[in-house]
Length: 303
Image (cartoon, rainbow, N blue to C red):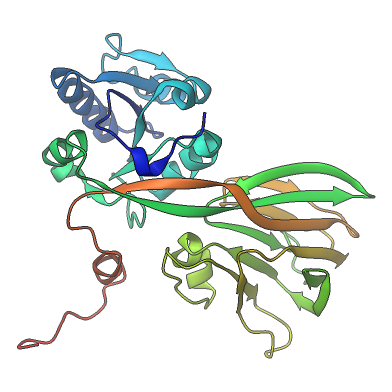
């Protein structure tokens, strides 16, 4: 069942998702589960999370289940960790439309915007329905070899095609909506959503795209020709990359899932039919988040 983001109601069932073997995350998850239980909320703990941290805290009181059950029964999911944990949860739950809330236990945390120390104080606003929903697009990709689809996946941040471990450049042809754009020799290409524009794309010199934009950024990695610059295309575009020459090419989905590529493989990318709903606490500002995370200068005094 895909939920309507416009009809969000105070949650009755919340899933908790973490990833790391971390005493801090284990303790945060325990405190959060107990708090939600006291507020009358049914608590699920994602199965791999329970396996990772169950030895650090007692999780016997809570229901343990997989992502499919979370998708079918949870009103929302709270992700404790960094952006990597959020990316994994987003791909696993995208088809179910489960809204996601991020509690930052990592480093930068562009998508996990609740601090650990503020976690419990924010829960009242969440349970009372005062969080703001924001939809984020995903990319859908398929790998075609000799006319047959051999793999497919989704990405919330980006799909990266690169040369792999071998030092030689990769060479491929780029087509957009069937039109030949250019032949690129480089270390690779980042195909990024607006959400992913503050990730690998930013490090490679790509633009920051506001999450409300409907565009896809194409950012070359160390192109041989300096005229190959980042470009942004409409989110309705059909993007195709054809591998012309490569020794160890690979496709990476959100930096977490990797597939090996061969010469003549085609990578077809488009906007996914699914979207992710992130829930932000009252007072959330995307630009304030950027100022904090990217250490932009503060507002001049007197302005």
